[in-house]
Every structure is written in C-alpha cells, then in structure tokens.
Image (cartoon, rainbow, N blue to C red; front, side, top):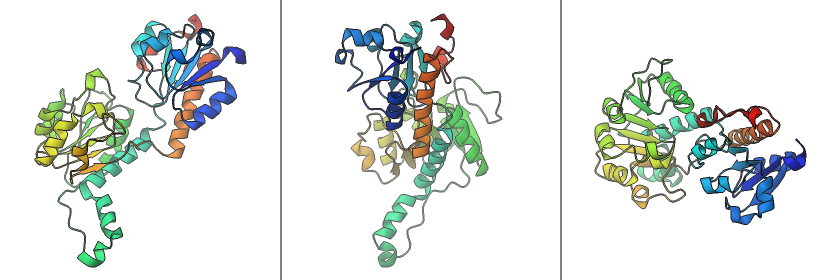
Length: 324
C-alpha cells in the first residue's frame, strides 16, 4: 500500500507521540473534532484509519466510506461505536496490557492514600503544623485486616489483585462469568460482593451495562467500615449516592481517579474530608503513555499493511483482514 493510500485521520486531541508517528509514517489529516463536516467529500473517501482519543459515532463512521480501522488510545473504548464499526467490517483496537501495571500501582497508592491520609499528612507537615500542633492525628482506617472485592477482574483487575494478595489480604471478585484460572471467591452479583467485603475496587469499563452500577444499595451493602476505590470509568459510580453515603458515614471513605463528567468533579465530593481525589492519572506516566501511543500506531501500521491487528477489541476479533 502506497503512502497516498495510507491516510490516517487525527480528530481532536491526540497524544503527541501518536501525532508524531502518524505524521511520519502515514499521510496524516488533522481536524479539530470527530465531525465529518470539517473535511470535504473527496478527503472523507481517502481516509483508511483513525487514531482516536475522542468519541467516534456511527454517523462519523458512515461518513468515511473507505474506513478500515479505528485505533483507540486507552483500554476503555466505550466512546467508540464498536458494534456499528464491526457491522461494517471495520477493525477497532485498544491499548491493553501496556498500562495494566501502572494502573494497578496507582490503585494501590490511591487505596493507601484513602486509608492512611498520606496527602493530608504531607499538607499538614508543609503547613508547619507538625511544629505548631504536634504529631498528625492517628488515622482511624488501615489496610490491615481488610477484605478486598474487585469489580472487574480483567487484566488490570488481576494485576491489582496480585499486588493486594502480596499485602496478605483476601481477594473476592465479581464479573459476568466466573474465571477458571483464579482461586478467589466469585460472587454472582455486585451487591453480593459488596456485602462480603469492606473494600470495593471498581475497575470495569464504562457503557450502558455498568452505568451507575455502584448505587445506593451497593454502598449500603458495603457498610460503615466500607471503602470504595474507583479507577475504571466515572460513569460506573452513582456520584450523588456516593456523596450522600460518605457524608452520612454509611461508608467510611472513598478514593476516586475517575469521574462521570471529567474534568468536572462534583463539589459535593470535593467538600468531603473522607475522600481522596486524583485527576484521572492512573496511567499517566511518560513511559506508559508513550507505550500506549506506540500501540495505537503499531495497530494502524499492521492493519494498513495487510497484517492482523495487534490488539483487536472483542467485538472485532472475527473481522478478516484478508477479506477486505
């Protein structure tokens, strides 16, 4: 395939390394958003691939008659209409594995911050209060003797479980189907998982199936010593219900790296003392984000060169590259 046939669209914001490599290896076309009205009909017909960090709708897909692949930056790909793409025989890829360890490390750190209040303790020291007021107050919560439930035991969830297992903590989990390769207790429902543990880590993808899955009933089941950690998608948490449960001490604390309307964080959560908040940084190291960017471009290169995609999403694993 010649360079003129390898036309890749960069809609909206993209990672700098993705842009650098796409511009070096393909004919790149940049537009301000995933809006077909921003390119003319002739250009729309030339697009073969998309490198995406934004929503890709069915209408946008249909406006690109020769589109072959959408390479999504990130493990979660709920912003891409994958089912519509698959119906049209268009490959969709994501970036699993390369960020699993980074996200798992961050999750453990967020859990410790939430329980032991390390950010607040550092702020106390920096404000000079160790000198003026004495030692930082003892934290009421600890990681010791906790039982952890993981909602979503995929690649990242399993990496989290292995780390917490090394801390000597029992692990339970809930997924749609039971895994046969682990010995952790499996719960058939999320509310059943919450009732069995006192620490709930949410790492499921977004989408209709998980929308506000962690609701008031789940939080009630988690109980007054319960701690919620969320590192998957903000849409999985009923944020008003969470804020109310924290304010009323129906659960003890929460640590959140993701939110339903990023970058807007509900003020009700910001105002609470028993919440640790991060600005969606679980995978945000230079090395990990560069590895994600490289996987985006490597998927584009493989597919447009006539080879199989490296990391197709499950909905697209049956798409035959040779049949195009």
